Image (cartoon, rainbow, N blue to C red; front, side, top):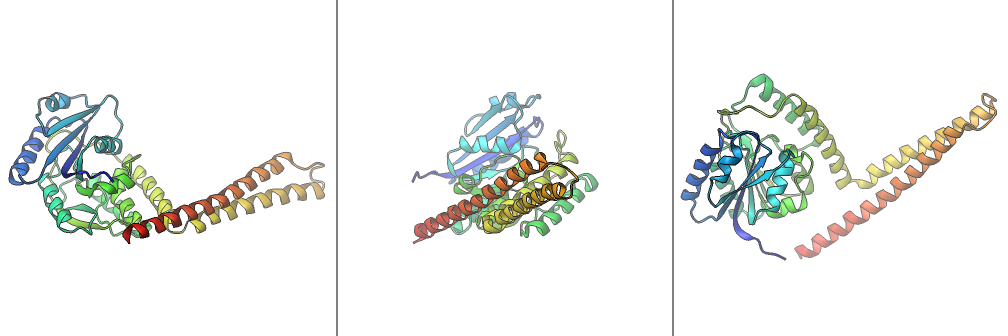
Length: 310
């Protein structure tokens, strides 16, 4: 197995954050000066900014470097892109809007390095400095609903500040828009997570990229996570239930077609019902087969992990 270099890769996705970047750079370099024993690289991801962000990035010297997205691909894909171009064992993530403090990443790193059982340190925004009705209240409702639906212990899913061991992202890539509830997916997968309070500051430059549409996306992410959790823990029940639903639907369609013919409501078997019933019946068979396959895969994965532990 490849041994990654000991150190911290700080990933900062940005879109039109030219105002906050210079101050973040100073904060990171001050933290590096205090923590001289830690090897650090800073990967900025310019997500198709149309301000002066990229010009600022080009003036930075190592350990800073920038990845430029020619078109906007979103925060999760930007983080994944940076991860694939990183080299260190620990991955730290903050937003580029200046509301997160880079200093917290080094504190999180020290916790992870001293507790080998931990995989993930997630921040909780202490004294969150956001507008109440447009940001804090919707976030509170969304977090509350997510904890109820997912039965998770993660308190602040929207906090961008986090440090994770590399193998976590190897197993759960930042695909889609998973960054919103990434710690939940890590928790579902079985990684050990610790939550600590982190700094949160008022936005000094630019404007927020999130609107009310974020809430809808957040709940879609929650539903996906709920389904993933169900599949990961009880795949037979999930796919078996779907298979039973499809089978019942197909039988109902066949019975309706036969009943219409017997009662002379139609003088022929309804082709649409019959064909539809066959298609739905095939879906029932396929879903039942899928339940068996997923169960076998998960069991094999469990046996392999137990062998590795021994």
